Every structure is written in structure tokens, then in C-alpha cells.
Image (tube, rainbow, N blue to C red; front, top):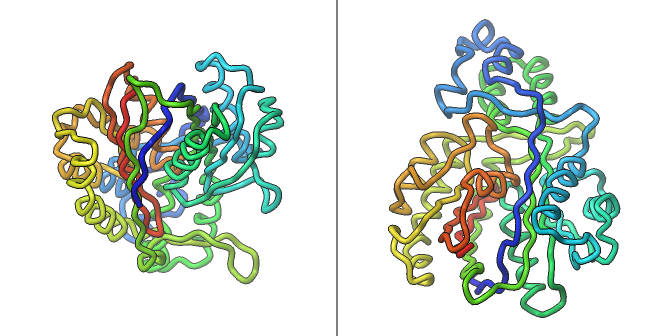
Length: 334
């Protein structure tokens, strides 16, 4: 799917919890060396992820999203009443019904906003931006808050218990990918594009035949369960991006050297290096956050974008991805 952008990013907000949890601590928790012969340095050596942040046990996804959304509002200098739509894009939600965006609207004071949740695994934020962009294009709204809050630490605690209950090497390898994630909140405010800045293009594609490579669901007893086959997911993701990147550059009328910042979904060192290589962009222009924060799932794009500290007029290429598998390539001028 291809669509022309009609909006620009007016501000970016992020939130990162204070508690730091190392990869070695998690491996020690499941006694990886004693039970499976795998050293506690394995995750860090394989992915480059040294640590991640955990939210407080009582924190809900909306709590992290609210903090990031408040930051975005303050940076944009907007009255919350000026927001016409709140789009929440996290994997996890506060409840099944109603949409989590309603609590975010209430707590931030966005009383005039229409609320909606959009979920598509790690790819949800990119999808949320495209929906917000479309609403701005029709003239339905002028300001859209796209926001997410991710608390995969809740799932990590379940994985630790699951491995303890079923301590087989096969179960360990199928579940250990969940240890690469971290908690965070992220948000952007979209406004109508100007002559100088705006999102130029969105390109999306999905391959449902790979859905079983990564999933998170509830079993017949109501317990959360899932798996993440990291190496296969990364290989397919790279191939999907390779097939699309030439078309994206042609649509933007850009060369790789024109890009000031490459913002990628991040799961580890090798996949990140491959993403930069396929885009033809120097790693110095591709900021990384995974070493300290892990895979922030749907919050990866806004947190990485904020870390790049882009300036007005910078050209930005976003390469998004999520289980399913789905990918996106977005080109914009800040």
C-alpha cells in the first residue's frame, strides 16, 4: 500500500521508566547456564542489548502513554483541547473495552478529541501515524496525538515462570526472545504539512504467512503465552525491506546520501546493521537505542526519533516493522 503524506510531526514526546534491568539478571533468573548450558551473557553477546527499563508493577500501558503524550503537548505548546483525535497504538491495553485512548484523553484533558485504538504489534505506531495523517488530509481534524505505552515487563515475568514450569531447551529458545524487550512510552503530534516540512510518503506491506514466528496470546486457561523466533523474524524483515527500498527512494526522489537520519525498528546489532546497509546509509546517521532500552516494540520509532535530535529541514527515513509480518517505509522532512 502506498499513500502520500499530508501531515508533519509538530513534536515528539517520550517516557522511560527509571528501573534498569540487565540482560544478565534476566538470564540468571531462569538459571540459563545451570539448566540449559547457556551463559548469562548470551543475550548481550547475540543482540547487543545490555539492559532495558521496567515500569512499576502497578503501571498500566496508558500510564506510560500519558506521560509521553503530556511531553509532546508541552513541546508543541498546544492546549489539550486543540487535539482533535487521540490514537493509541500499543500492543497491550488497559482493558479489552473501551479503547485505552479514552483514558489517555481523560487524563490529558483532550476533551474535544475522538478516541481510537490501533494495534499491529511493533508496527502499530507507524499505522497510527498513517491513520492520523489521513484524518488531517480529509480536513476532519487539525491536530492528532499518536501515542503508545508498552509494558512488556509484565510478559517477561510470565515468561520467567513459564520457563521455570517447563524447563526444556526447546521451550527456553522459543520464549527467550521476550527478554529482549523493554518498557517505554512514545508520542507525536501530527499537524497539517507545510510547504517546507511534512511526511512525503508511506509504503506498507504485510506477509501473514509469517504470523506464527512471533505471537502473544492467551491460552485456554487465560494465561498469557507467546514466542519470538528472533533470527527468522529478522531475516524475513530484511528481505521485505530490501524488496521495497528502491521503490521508496524513487517515490521520494531521494538518494541514500540525501537522508539525514535513518530511524529503524530495533531488535539488535546485526539486524540494525543490515537495515542501514540495505538503505545505503552510514551507521553514523542511524541512531541506536537497543543497547540501553532493548526492543521497545511500538514505542521504538518515537523514542529513536527523539534520540536523533533532528533539526528543522532534516530528511528522515523511517523503516518500521512488526510481527505478522508487517513493514513500512516512511520518508519525511521535519
